[in-house]
Image 1: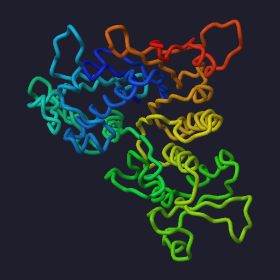
Image 2 (image 1 turned 30 degrees about the horizontal axis):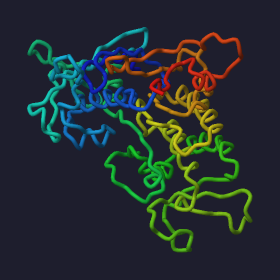
Image 3 (image 1 turned 135 degrees about the vertical axis):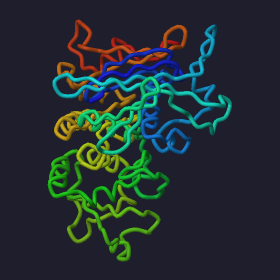
Length: 374
C-alpha cells in the first residue's frame, strides 16, 4: 500500500509530504491544489509505466499545461525545472520500499513535450522491476514490491461525466473503466456471480430500484427500449411500475444512479485498479446518499483491498467518515500567504461546546477548507 507521498515543485505544490491511509478525503477551497495532489501520483504512475507523453497523461486524468506552467511558479522564487515525487510503499511486516521520480523535459515551453524520468526505476512485467542505481541496472523481483509498483502504474483519476456513464460518448482508451466513466456497462456485464451479489446488496441506496441488468446482445434496443443514441447495454427495473412495463435503459435513467453504480462497481470489481483517485465524488448525488455511499465504499475498500484518494465539496461526504479508524483520513487543503499548497490531517473532531457533525464543523469554519477572502 502507498503510505507516503512527497511532492516538490508541481504546480501550486512547492513542497508537501502526505501520510496516506486506505481512504483519503481531501477538502478545501476551489483552486487550493486538491487535484494537483491527485495529479502528482499520475505523473509518478506514468513514469513507471513509461508513458510520459501527452496522451498517456490525459488518459490518466492529468490537466495538461506547458511544462513552465507545470513547474511551481511563485513570486520572488526562482523557478526550478524539475518535479520531484517520492513514494513510500509499505508491505507486510512494515517492510518499506521507496519509489523516486525526477521529472523534466527538453522544451519547457512546449505543451506537447514528452517528460522524462531521471530516476530510472520502471515496471517491466508481473515478475520484475528494473532499477538503475549509479549507472548500474538491477532487477527487483520481491513479489510485494512488484505487485505494488504494478498497481501504481494502473493509477488514474476518475472525474465522471454523465454522457460517458450512459454510453453517449466513448473517448477513453482505458479499460475496464475510462476516466469519465466509459465502459461501466461492459464491466458490469463481466461481473462474476459473487460480484453481482455484492452489488445487489446496495440496491437500497436507490429507493425505486428493483434490479440492474445488462443486455449483452443489445436485443432490447430493437424492441424500442432506447433510441440507440447510447451504446450502453445497461438497464434498470423500477419496483413501483407495472411489471409488464418497468424496464428502461441507461439512456433514460436519472443521472444519480449511474454515478452510484459506477462507484460501487469500481470498489467491487477485481478488474479495476487497486489504487485510484476520484475527483468530486459528490457530483449528481443527494447529500444523504453521499454520506451513506462513502460508508459503504470504505467497507468495500477494506474487503476488496482498494486504496483511494477522494476530493469533495459536499459537507455530507464527511459524515460518512470515522476519524477513529486509522484506515480513514481527512485532509484539509489550503494555500498559504505565498500561494503554496499545504495539507493538514484532521485526526479528531475539533473541540466544540456543541455536539456537531463533521459537515457542520466544516460549514462553521472549525475545520478550515473554506474561502477566507470574503
